[in-house]
Length: 277
Image (cartoon, rainbow, N blue to C red; front, side, top):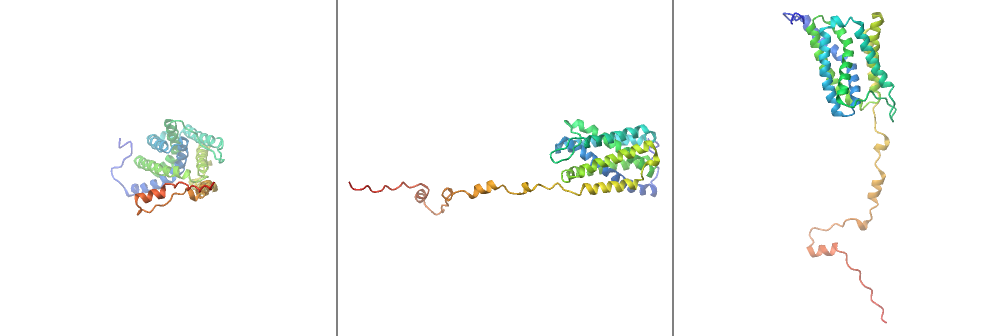
């Protein structure tokens, strides 16, 4: 098994130097993945179910990602897998932008009725993103165990960032649109690799494009409307229109019981003296 994983008998300085590089690389490549998964969990419309779907979905995604790394030499060079991943990501983007707009003019991703409808979508979306990230990791490191460790750290970073993006999607207007445009870029990149590797833009172009999209996504917050900030005038008017005669009378604590009754009980109206007949 150790021979299969290319596990070295000793740790070299070069191998140790690759670990932080892979960690940073996985964190950067997981940013677009995280916002995509966070946007998908919005389809459950329940914060508890969103977190549960993300946790279970990423556990399944971790198993699929590790399996992809172990068979990377057979899968990475197979254009059928890249084509399937590209079409799957572009299908998600089409579903989002073709969905009807809500009252605020915003699109929404696929809606899920149950938890187990969302989990496979999350897992296979991460797998489609991994087709690109695993290829990059293999280009950086040749040792399989180093790539496995980097993938493990990447899943942990992905869970942390996806949790943040779930919260930010509720706060920023353009962030969900930016996330799905990022998904489209990854899908187009995979599609270009199927057609011809020379058409694929370099990594720095993707990083700059994603940075620009994230800047736009965080550019506008979902502020409450002016009507929500104004106090209701009816309640304030009703409180100020209470007549003084109905207001409770303050009774000093030093009065005796008989004196209290005189204050609280209304006195009978005095009879006017009758005119002498």
